[in-house]
Image (tube, rainbow, N blue to C red):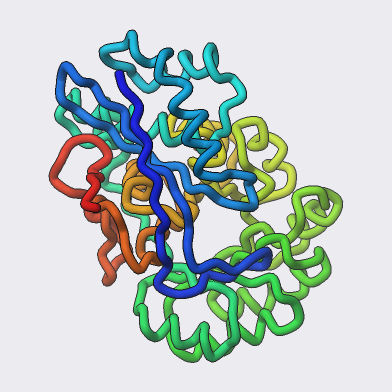
Length: 343
C-alpha cells in the first residue's frame, strides 16, 4: 500500500471569524492510500489548522515517513490501520491519523462496492440536517451573509461579549430557521446563564462551548442553571473526554480530526449514548474529501455542522453535498465515502 500527500490552500468565500482568529485561506493536506493491485485510491484529509500547531511541510514529512510501514500491506481494514499506527507511530497527530483513517474507510467501501456508512449498523431512515455557519463579524455583515445563503438551520459564531444577544435578535428578524450558538469559549458562566433565557426565546436550540475547558466550576454552574442545553466542543476532543463531559454538558460535538478518525468517533458516539448525552459531529474548514467522510456518521447523530466545503471559494474535490431546502446529505452514487479530486 502506498501513501501520497496532496497539499492545497483552500480559499474561503468570505473571511471567517471566530473568537480566536480570522482567516481567508485554509491550508490542508489530502492524503491518498493506494492499493496498486486493485487500482483503488482512498482519500482522507487533514486541515493544517494553525492553532493546533500543524503545518504542511512537517505533516507531509511525518506521513511519508510511514511509507515503509505501509508498503508490505496489499490492503488495510480500518481496524488494522489503527493497529499499524499504534505500533509504528503512536504519537502521530490525530489530524494526520484521521486522514489515514478516513482514507482507509474510503478504500474499505470501494472493496465492498458499497458506500461506507451503509456497511455500518445504522438507522438509515434517520436524517439529520447540517447547519450553515455565520462567522463572527459586524452585525450588518452577519445579516448580509445570512440573507445571501438561505438555509434551514444556522450556527452563529459568538463570543464577543455584551452584544451577542443583540446579534441573535438582529438575525432573527431575517429568518425563522433554528439557530445553534457557538461561543467558542468566549463567555463567562454568569454571561452564559444570563444570555441563555433570551436566546431560548429567540429560537436558539443549544449553546456550544461557552466557557474555557479549564473552567469546570463554571461549567457545572451553567449545566445546572442554563435555560438551554450546553454542548462540549473544546472540552471533548478525544475518547477519554466523553465520560467527564457527562458531568458538565448535555451533549458533545465530535470533531473527527481531533479524535483521530471515524473509528474512534463511532466509539465516542456509542459511549455518549450510553451516558445519556446528545451527539453532534462538526468539521473544520475542509474540502469535500473531509466532509464526505464525516457525512457517513449522519444517521448516528442528533445534530451536524458539516458546512466546511460550503464555505470555500474553490473546492479541489467533489463528494457529498447538502440540499439547501432541507440541509440533508446528498450522497454520490459511488462506493466508499463518495469523494474524488478534481483539481
